[in-house]
Image (cartoon, rainbow, N blue to C red; front, side, top):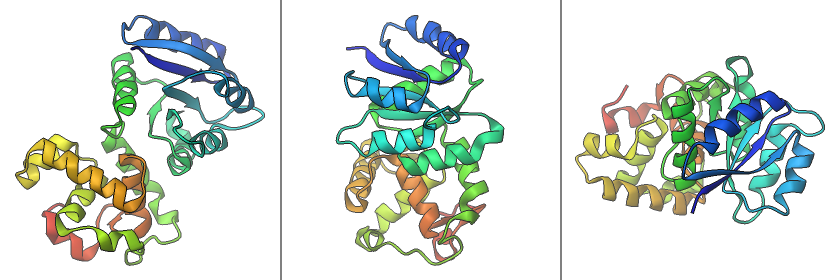
Length: 233
């Protein structure tokens, strides 16, 4: 079954360009479009969608609040925030609101398609290195930034799960984590699944955000006592 994509952007030409790229893919189908957040929510109430490409600056209702409302529903579609370098703060807010990742509006078509497939599978953070740079920039603004980790769920993690969480937050893929810890990729995937369950998180992006929020990973590096766990800097 094709991945059902919705385009939400107030720029008609941008939506047209994305639609042309997606229409050429045998495993994707643009099933809906909207020019603002209010329209998007109305359309979603009557349309089955797997992945939403969401602009952040729109009239009536912006992409961040629209994303928050979408992700508060049971079994919501995945949301990919569309942003530009000068709107990174909106992308950060979008991740906090529940988006599964973000892409730059001028992203090469191949990367956009790979991102849609990734979030649809729920298996990877979109552009994890970019996500980490974004969080490095905005993590100091978080309420708990610079403090010791404060989250009851972290205490339930095993040492190995904590190691995996730190590496996920550093932007490593399952394959890279497997190589770093000398584990099979399947084992890493199992650990990630247990981390999500124990912490009550939906996907890897939320793992990354929580790691920064709690101070488990800090802007520019790891929290003190965890720096030696992975040998990463």
